[in-house]
Length: 257
Image 1 (cartoon, rainbow, N blue to C red):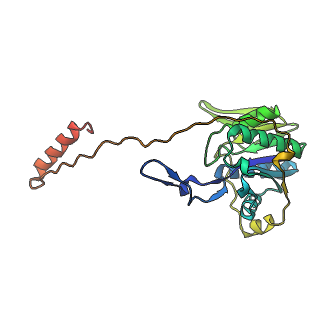
Image 2: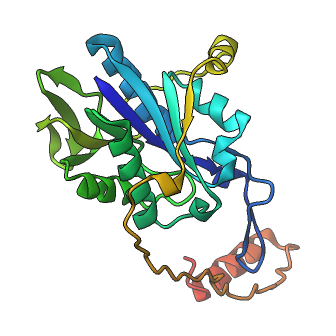
Image 3: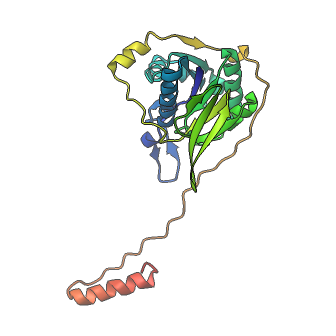
């Protein structure tokens, strides 16, 4: 099998600072291989270990994804090789553009049986790129997938639903996004990191990909909710019983009790 892992090298929101006015400061946030993408990479590795083939990492983004740190960080996750499309125009690209570039890169790789993605990117968490990618390729797609099993030219996928669990067989090629708890991803060790430096990396230029121009206008605003002003009411605690009654009365009047 030839499996492509579409991943995103993105800043971790846990490292971001939120100012009092609601603005988000990303300057201290370190970029890395997304935690959900690591699940997809582990699912792919286990599939290939059983059925044979290769796992190819594919990333689209700004120049940062081509750095040595980004390459080693991705390849240490059990990927056999890497294909990246790094261009300043793709830094913080909208979902439509990202999906179009990913689809063109998948077609350039050729003979791909399966594209796997994580449940969501850690920074945006839109969960729309896999569906857009599948639509662009004309392939079936499923979300929230557990560890699939190979059944001939198809995959049998186990999915959690509101009423229990279901098994679905999907014909290949297909695009699947994995559930966050599909598997427990491996933690790269020193051996994995050293081996990553020796694995091949292919860089594709946007100009070399057959991509029809398209844009998705996005407008967003972040506002800080107006919090009620604090009430500073002092209660005389000389008489504990009276103080307790006063406290209950105040909380009841404020609607807290």
